[in-house]
Length: 638
Image (cartoon, rainbow, N blue to C red):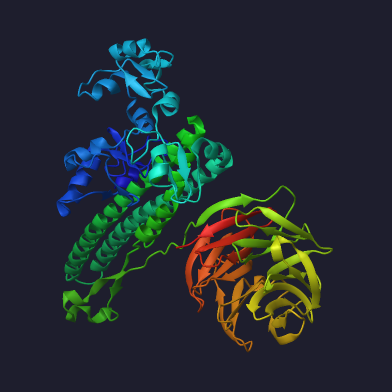
């Protein structure tokens, strides 16, 4: 099978032909293909759409189109830029492979002898002489092609360019955060003048492109690669088991032949034929599946390889732009892995013999036995939804509570610092309140007021009006209160422990009046609580039993969610759409459930020990905090 030759150290491969690149062409989404493979793909797409204006990338399905759309479909592939890093790695490109760019504009192909690192163009001998005679150009640094060809570091440093997709030839200078795209100066005035945040690309790259971020991206790509290789191995193992089973049944039948009569010859022939047919049918399917797996595997490897090279040798701009492109593909990779390969066919066969062997002579040979096909499949419940991390400071921290406020603000409860911190819409700390005891959880209490639970029975009501945190009053619960959540109308829900075996949840007004109180059996632990928008379902995490309980307003248990993938449940939050998000503190993941308790997705967390979670209002994003980290992680699900 095609999977037999997976080499960890092999050079980048084309995701279409699964072979070394031949004239690699890079699409705007950063996926690379052989020019001939891309041409064949475009021509195939064009047969279905004669008026084709753009086509979908074979890997990520993002639309792509050449800069000159008037050319024929046959020419489109050649109009996309060369991936110089892959070209150098795959074929050790020699200097004769570089054509003078100045002469090429006049339709002449002359081998380049030098490369201007300022103009970023390969030049022939005559053009070098002209270059050196021009007053504005003579001070440009022109390197001999021997220093460029085959030298990956110089290729990345000098040859690789990021040009504007709308203005061919213009190097990108700015980055639009609204559209997540790099653009040239012309684009900033034509397409982005109303955008909220357009920044200088060099400044943004220097500010955000850190080594840790690069390592994190590479690790994500490696993780995806590991999943794909696992799928390939499962496909191969399934075929081997089928072959072994069929061979074993043939041996079993041959043994029976010595004990009964010659009619078993017909059964043996039947089993052999059915077995061969089964193997042939599944071999084709497995090979096709593995080809798709390999295609995606090479695409992921290419992204990883390209990013590692740029990260090691490239400029900050190159690192930043490559990181942006690669990061934008991560969710698409996870989506393809989940949608295309999450159900691996693990078909097995068993031989069922007739129970009354003594009467076999009186039976037709077709009734002696038959192959029974048992189908099963795997389900991959793995997603990546992490967007970014925001570091808030350097001190030891354990943010055990987080909630959102009007104006896209956040307020955090820090257990270790005995403080709460108010963050503005840009996630800058604008106010801090120091308490005398450890703080546990926080929620909205009323208009411009929040409620914070402490280690004891007291709940502090604080004002956050005008971005100033100030104490308003203190109310007390019946027992030690751990966690709180907003219910509305001056009411909050609380949880806590009565004793080592019993927990409680209830409702209390922000003035301190208890409205209801419910007990349930549980070991000693911190039980977080969340409520749906209609205040009819209360979700409580129980870490001692690795479960989530749902109660109605009367305290009746509606359901209990348990999963082998949920360990040490901590924070819980309910989105406006009704989805319930539960953190697995020890399993390092986030479970998204339906309101009725059915698992919809499981998201992996980047850092260990996720603690508190808060769904942001009117968005598909949510905030997660982690143990011993004074930072917040932003996730998004679609």
